[in-house]
Length: 99
Image (cartoon, rainbow, N blue to C red; front, side):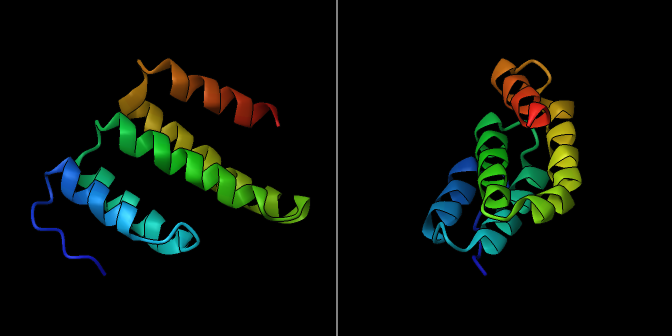
């Protein structure tokens, strides 16, 4: 587990996330969740967390994707509480829902 020196510093969280291998989604997701709990207004954190989550779910077959669909949908909706003025988040959400 990464020790974050300043939990209110975007750079501290971002460095910890980048230091975690891309193939370790569970740990990266945990870092994103923790980072967002301290910095809920960070577009960059939300954007990359949502993107990586969608990519992670795509690797499963269709039946398993359906199981994860609700969780990814809820994550998008939660992000829109803070990112409601960010069109890229809305567009990605609409594209995800259309699948």
